[in-house]
Image (cartoon, rainbow, N blue to C red; front, side):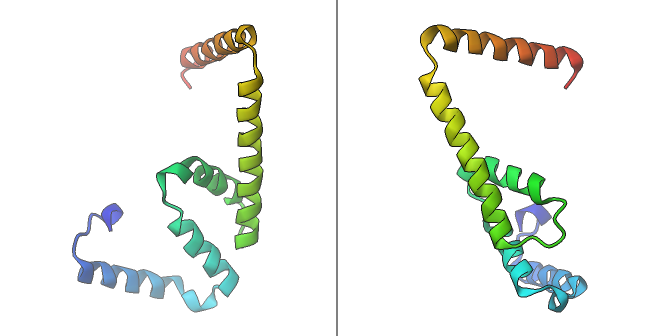
Length: 114
């Protein structure tokens, strides 16, 4: 509702009704509809990065399914966990070098206007 700047439930129900009818929802297979509902429901702030990665990854998938979404989530979580473990293992000297590299990279990107 907030994205549509609509605070009236009756008006919102009319919008939902129209959108669903225009989408011809009966032609969407049940498994794809489940994936759509899952994606629409993933709105917790702590899952924002995961959701961003999922949407970027499955963007080209014309028929997303819950299983394909979960595979993307699993890969993302595994990479994130590995990166976190690596960061914890970096010694003080190495951590300082890594931070300098990150600052240098960020500075270079700013200069290039990214």
